[in-house]
Image 1 (tube, rainbow, N blue to C red):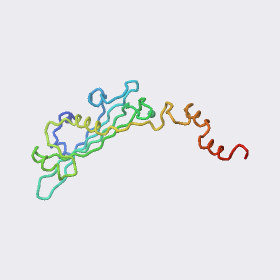
Image 2: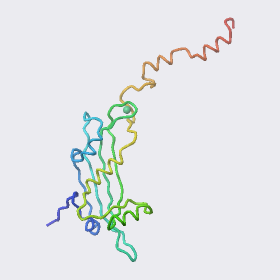
Image 3: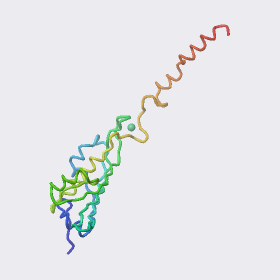
Image 4: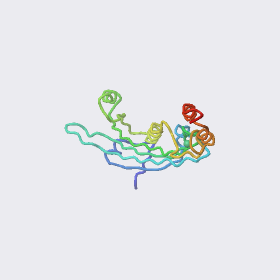
Length: 182
Ligand SMILES: [Zn+2]
């Protein structure tokens, strides 16, 4: 019988040693902290897609390193910082984690290692990690590629056109200089 893996309760050691990959999708409502980031419920968010890959990296004279590669994405309605209306942004996360035996090792390595170090667990909630990573990957300034609403100072704005039709003060100055008789 095929062993069913629960991404909320992963044995990271065997997940990495067996080079298991696991993927799935879920409703945003299952990730409440991520769901809280939605600006509007008028646009429905997409499903959360995630992919996990376990792997080991052999070391000479030491135990194999335990790694987890994570990829996740979701389409989330955020607030466009230009027109302040909702924009459906694709949020994507991709990160690799190395797992070490205990907190002290993680703390010792954290300063020197470039990779993200976590403490290994045989009951690891990978979906909570997916949520963390997607929250960290939220765009700082969500923007429409092209805003649906009128934006002040755009050519489509009536006030902007009025401003363009108004005589240019430098133009007036120039005609004054020329004098009324020229
Ligand atoms: Zn916009």
